[in-house]
Image 1 (cartoon, rainbow over the protein chains, first blue to last red):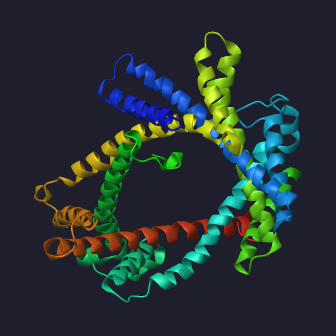
Image 2: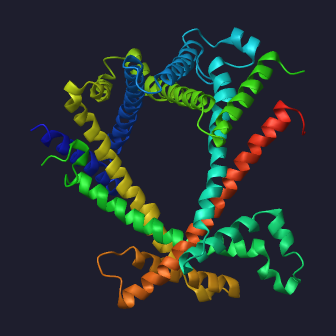
Length: 232
Length: 212
């Protein structure tokens, strides 16, 4: 019984979304718009659950002095400072418990929440992703060994696309006459992106789309039950 | 004249960048501290964003403004609290009810969205007449799209063994897929390099003032 009601709710919610697509009139239209708001609210609580889970994990690590527990203090401090400034002074578009934060804006130029976002969060995020530029180079070294026809194709298309988007690539084929314009690296790169790449991506998108439709149907019909522990 | 707080912010940004990049040498305490700050700030950012932009306007403000008129919102509120109860193992099963609503709605939305945008729209875009265009390059390109898409789909068809006619087409399909993966890889590299250039511009421009 524990699993029957959730499966019925899943079926009805999924069915309602499907039916409203084909009957866009009352009561389905209003029911779906109401369900979408409910969906947002519950998703909001799901995000809260995620943050509580993060806190719980870090607190346990500190409590039991697990490996690297000292770094958990940094995580918790960063979390609570950001949360506190967000709640007290609000964000750029929202007022906090202490109001609009006009005085603090006068002294530091913006609200503390936006200040941390702009000068710490954005820099950390950009640096973290830029770090991948170095690792992608070592991945490229492994991927770009043309052992088979497939890996040779991967190598050639990646190099052409990269060179075709740089000034170096443009200058490499700039000596070619106008009649051989189609052999200019930027043009070859554009051709690869527009046609063979589109074809490959389209096959992936259609295949993945069919897969998602199948999985969604399995979920709605209650065949796929892994989200409740896979119980029959 | 740069404001003191702006200077402090630029220094914080520069130190954060160097701390993250220190990982290139090896895993070290500076990187770990920067990583943990990123995790903490990121989690709090999304929590504050959720509170101000989702929970307050859709739930709390409605219940505070008119608790009787908006009684229906107590249901998602209670379901949301049941979702949070998942952190207590004893009450884990209570979260199945809000989860079922989320999963059912997501499945319904995904089914329709992917059917329309991914399957039907992409199939329609592939059903073109390649000979309708006078430009030979476009004509060849459109033939490539048709052949590439069909053979690519054959490659993803696993209900029949890839041999004979299916095998040949699957082999052609994989050629298109590899070209596509190569192009995507090239674009990813370009994007990461441009992020790296942005970071270097910040360090040498905004922080050290060595470049304009």
